[in-house]
Image 1 (tube, rainbow, N blue to C red):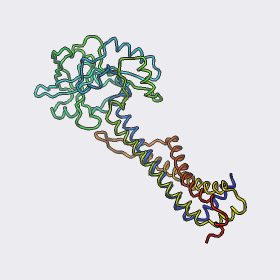
Image 2: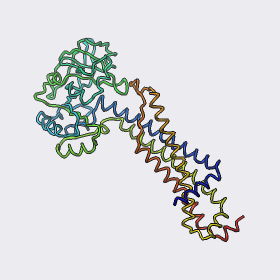
Image 3: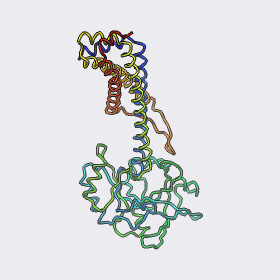
Image 4: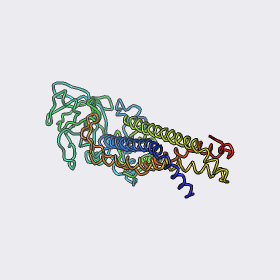
Length: 407
C-alpha cells in the first residue's frame, strides 16, 4: 500500500504544473467553504444569541392554543396560578434548566395626557427575567447597570418608536388603559423610566412593566401568567428538554425559539446557503480530479500496457490511479483547510464591526469548528476518490497488446 502511494506521488510530480493548477482549484474551493461556513455560522450564532438572550429566551411554555392566537394576546388563555406552580415544580427539578421567568402579555392604550396609541406589554418579574434574558438591559437606550433590576413597581419601559412619536421622556407620567378578561376597562398611571429598542427595526411596539402592576391593572386574581420563558444550560439539547417537559406537562405547549421567531427562517436560509456552497465545492473537486486523471490515463496508455504485460493485476493498476486521485485531493484539502482556518483567525483578530437592523457594534468572532472542518475534508477526499474511479477502472481494463500498440 505504501509503495502504491509512493508511485502515485511520483507520477503526480511528473506533471508538476498540471498538478499544482488542479490542487490550486481544490485549495480555493476548500478555503472558500471554510471561510463562508465559519463566517455565516458565526453570524447565525450571534443573531440567535441576541434574539434569545434579549427577548424570547430558549423555550416558552403556554396554554394549548395560545401561540395560534398570539396576535390578539388573549387573556382568557393564561395559565392559572395552580398550573404555574406545577410547571415551576417541574422546572426546578430539571438540571438542564438554568432559569425561568413568568410573563403576563397583553395589549393596552398608552396616553401621555395629550394623545394615545396602542402598545403591547410584557409584564415581567425583573429579577427572574434578567436571569433568562441576560442581554435584555442592552436594548435600553438609557445607561443601565446590569446588576440592578431594569424596572420597579410603578414604572414602565416603552418602545423607542412610541417615545419619539409622542415626545415622552424618561420620568414623564403616562397612563395605561387595558381591557380586562371580563371585558371591563381599567386605567392606571405609571412613570416612564426607560426607552427600549426593538431588535430588528423601528416598527416595534413592545414595552415592559412590572408583573405586579399588570395584575392590578388587569384585575387578575392569584398568580396567573401568560407564558413561562426558559433559559437552558449551554450544553443542553433543546429537543430533549422539550420532549421531557411535554411528557411531564400534558395539555401545555412547549416551543423552542425557532417556533416563535421569524429569524428561524433566516437561519434556515443560512444553512441552505452553506450546503449550496459545499455542493459547488464538490463539483469543482470532481471536475478537476476527473480531468487530471483522464489526461493521466490517456498520456500513459503504453506505460499501463507495459506494467500489465509484466503481470501487474488490474486491481493494483486501479489502486494506483485511485491513490493518485486521493493524493491530489489530500494535498488540496490540507492546504485549503490551513488557509481557511488562517483566514478565520485573521477575521477574529481584526474584530470587524457591522450593523444588522437597529443592532450596532456587532463584532464578527468566528469560531473554529473542528467537526465542521473534518466533514469538509472528508467530503473533498471522497469526491476526489470518486472522480478517480472511472479513469482508474478504464486503465485497469486495458488489454496489454492494444495498450502497447497505442501511438
